[in-house]
Length: 117
Length: 108
Image 1 (cartoon, rainbow over the protein chains, first blue to last red):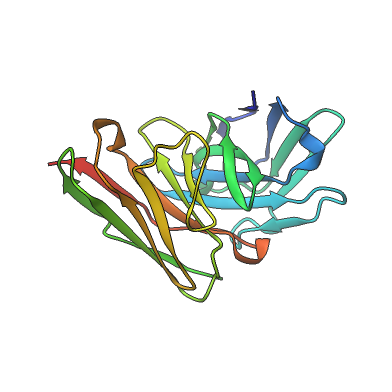
Image 2 (cartoon, rainbow over the protein chains, first blue to last red):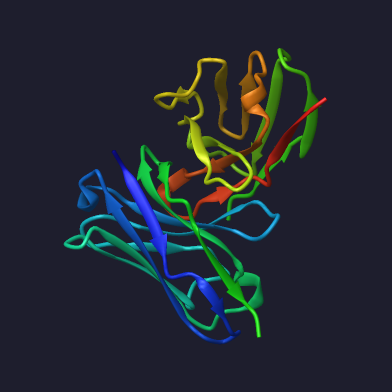
């Protein structure tokens, strides 16, 4: 069975960095594009970034481009999100997702990131 | 960037009602449109992909239609477990994705 489990969330001060991880199992990780999506408290879903397979081309939403970096380690079946220069508006639950047929067919339970002094 | 507009933002309905939610894209996205259901405190769940294809395991009372800029999610007979928030999402061109703002379906 497909499993995605995020980790690395927590409380961080504005301007600091945080690295999220997503451990994948139950499928051949290297064969699938992956995604990060976030949800601020009480708000809707917001797509953050995607990463392709084989060469790992990356794509970002405008407000995180240049601050966030999505990456993957196929040997470790892991997805990452390096978040730098964090802002209060980055506070959210961050979900990793497995892309199938251009949709997010599987989601992790999410990890909460709180940016506050 | 492609903007997605859902309507209504919320609705009240009774068990057994037929419910329709619409999603409009700011430009043509062919059939690169997906629908998700989210319950409080849980991760979203994919219902419909490619505008009209039912995800495995999803009840057949859910259906999707549309292409180009206008799309619809229909629940043919609302069940108690269907009270949730629904989101559309475009994946056109696989470059940058966008979600709609969500539609909360509440009990009348």
